[in-house]
Image (cartoon, rainbow, N blue to C red; front, top):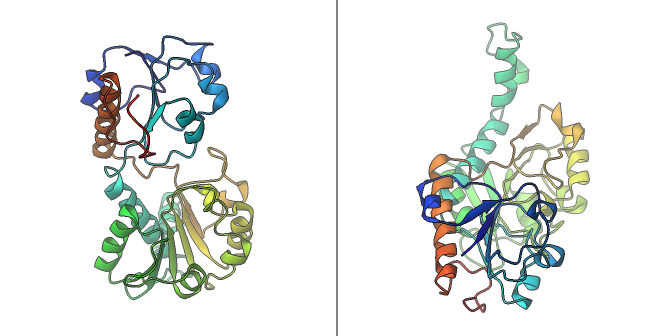
Length: 308
């Protein structure tokens, strides 16, 4: 099976693939034209739509490196009998860890303090109001999306003495709230839903306005889940604070956010640990190998799909 990949993926599992070529740039231009010999794409963040698929008439599988596959037109792939897979489960802990790290960094003003030390602005006192944060223990975390990652965040938050509320499509369960009620009641909101037509712009200006004064938004999911312009306005006003790992137009970040002390910014690194990335590669390769054997890949993102 001939594979065209975005890059060489981390870990020894990648060496199990014998016929791999690498893109020279982003798709579709990076493919270098029509590629009838390509059976599989191994991609991360690439836009896969009808224009891209037209270049690969023999394609049998698009193997996505990551859980979110919103950049892939699954319907277009299914219409052509092309399987689409992702790498679920293995990045749960790493993403949950980052969500909590952002929460702690924002609430305890860790980045503000770090910059003060590095730039020589710390004068040795500990009562400077610029370093005054908020308690994490005893506050309430509202989790939007209570799947594997959301539940892992809840476990970590509980260990810090936080109360946990949650909202998900499956109504009920301990701490469940309607979304608007959750936004108004919690001190910190953490987003853990996939980007779909239903969740795009889920937190618009009216819902962001429901956040408490001094509230905090953590987003390690997708930037487009939030109305970014409305979020920027709220953050510039200083009414709320945020820890953001994702943005609406990556790698572009709204310039207004860069100098704000009430925002912590990271470059979409939810899964960025060596152990997690190697585990993701293992899952990616298993999907590719199954497709190469004409078997049903283990991580199809649309269950009704048959093996290619």
